[in-house]
Length: 215
Image (cartoon, rainbow, N blue to C red; front, side):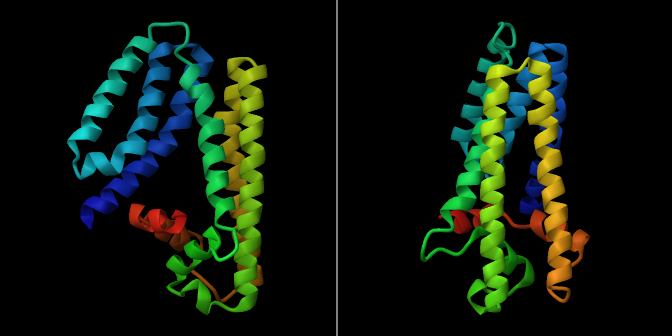
């Protein structure tokens, strides 16, 4: 349990660090910073397997590190960073959207159920409708951001792209999350913890929860 919590918080630290390192790489054109940012992404993706630990994950990480060291010394060091935002944001958008199919529990409904300790099927009909609407909203917002990230990667200079993809994306997502949380508290004032408790509980939703939610 303690190892799982430590891994969850480490993943959060790595995710917060990534846009800062990536933006610094784009601003300076430094290939080593670009390689460090890409290595950060690899750690986020492989963290669960590394903690277990699995030999294959460590070998893969070593191989990626070697490739990034080589890439850092070429003119194409920023390429993985240009591709990462549209790919990652697009995958998250798809993760939200696919849970809206008939017979599925909307992703926001699963998250709300895990945080509040109430299965989605036992929630009030109005709350279930709301979780479906918010899941739609997240899918659309993230889909638009993924398309914009790709357009900036193709058309904009690296620094302008970075301001949008590595800073703007997080501001838009964070702003939407805060606005939705504030609206939710007004609409359902007696449901769920405050913002601090909500963020803490979100941080404790481990890989097993996300695997089940996205299956």
